[in-house]
Length: 191
Image 1 (spheres, rainbow, N blue to C red):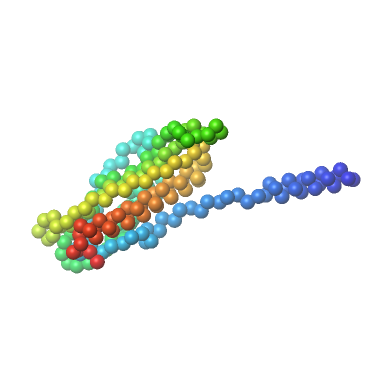
Image 2 (image 1 turned 90 degrees about the horizontal axis):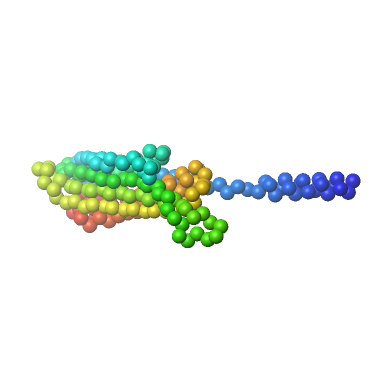
């Protein structure tokens, strides 16, 4: 009887310890409306998608639900407003890429992985403001990049969360820099 109670207690403790909570990482929310906004004196916006992704082993845009090009287009459509009845704002998206590279982990200790993944997001966009006669009035170029690393052997869910977080942070940097550069170089045309 004593052994049976001990065994039951042991099973009960084993059950309790096996039911420890699992860390749940919340998904990244791409709420573009929370990023910087600006209004420009123009009656039309033209978005030129001059970026052609190079599909290679390192380029992972085709594997993402929200690739950087879609995030930047959503931000432009949502957060750049126009007012007035003259001028034309031309936005040239030159680069919106994300790369995943396998690199050596130079800081690895004895029990850590010797290779890791590095993710890098890069945005390059040119803003041009033309008057009604198609003369360039003002222009600026905004460039932003961010990178992060992860262990080589992680789940697909963790990979997606890391990549989405990186894209959102890079987009936040890009929106902040876009607003400040447009305020600087298109000073008389913004609100």
